[in-house]
Length: 435
Ligand SMILES: NC(=O)c1ccc[n+]([C@@H]2O[C@H](COP(=O)([O-])OP(=O)(O)OC[C@H]3O[C@@H](n4cnc5c(N)ncnc54)[C@H](O)[C@@H]3O)[C@@H](O)[C@H]2O)c1
Image (cartoon, rainbow, N blue to C red; front, side, top):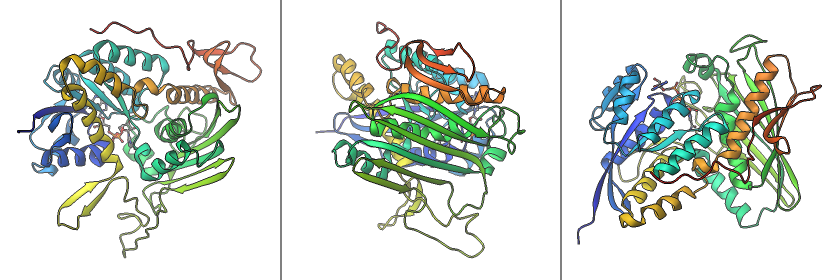
């Protein structure tokens, strides 16, 4: 009996750092080796077009890949994106700066393609509602990449929580510090008015929400300025975000998430990241950099090579059987999305496609429909930082109060600002008929 075989053509928007770190190795591997899913058979995943603003990096990527990515078109500017929408790709991955995700993803979904968006998905709940409504009406997948949920350490944490070994979280901290080459080099084009919380705290916002469940009820934040921008401007060097949750047990938990993008480039690791979560019956300490390896190479560590290396995220290996590979959870999360698309499209009869699509939409780890608390946290944090930049520091955002879903309260002000009216938990944009 021959195994069915399907071509899955993928378009990509954005040819920056994350493309190079995770999408490139995923596409290279999938070019050599098709996906096999029991329900679909073999799926040949191919990158067929790479769209970016100027095309400079895309040309370099194509040259360096030297055929390993297969043939793909390089598209630039608005015209290039428009032609990608009209091409025969089934899905498009978006890895542009985060303030451009919404508009691009909206057009992808409206063109009837599945979409995968780099974190943070979008910056407001209104944008999230709009994307989710279009995804539902076209019966397409709208997913976001949170690769930390696939980190084996975080999977173990969640397993212990779900299995009741760790009982009721009570508080925790997470810290992720980026080197200053990110803020002062790589991101200079779009960094004005931005903050590191949206860029990296969102990893931990999602980890807390996905791992512990509960309901977000209050958001507060502070930050520091002066290195990336001026000490009184709207561009932030570092951010301390506090999220308060409540649980069905009647107990509360508070999480402090500290992020920055102005630390030295000669960190012993690529980034500095650690967590501590406390439970009524235990403590979880995790350090994503100090995982047990320390490498020293004369004149090369810790700048060109890092001393403490994360071999789980995305690393190059010489496999024991001689192959050269680049693998890790950062790559795995992208492959998984392609498997989900393949399952929806070819995992059974056409009549049953709506059920397959619904079952994949229910996956809370990556579906946009489950991203409401994380987007609420990002929107609340950004509103607090924007007010602070205008001289109104210390405001607090509440979730699902009688005044609205997301409401900002400033010190000394009688009337709060409603950032988003509908409830975060329970209410959603009305279901639309499939098109
Ligand atoms: N999963 C992770 O851990 C991780 C790590 C880094 C970045 N990211 C996310 O990936 C996204 C991109 O980050 P990056 O570090 O690769 O950024 P980058 O600045 O290195 O690259 C951005 C790319 O987007 C392209 N671009 C910008 N505007 C565009 C537009 N309007 N149309 C088409 N292309 C456009 C640029 O040409 C460039 O190729 C961000 O959302 C970021 O948060 C995720």
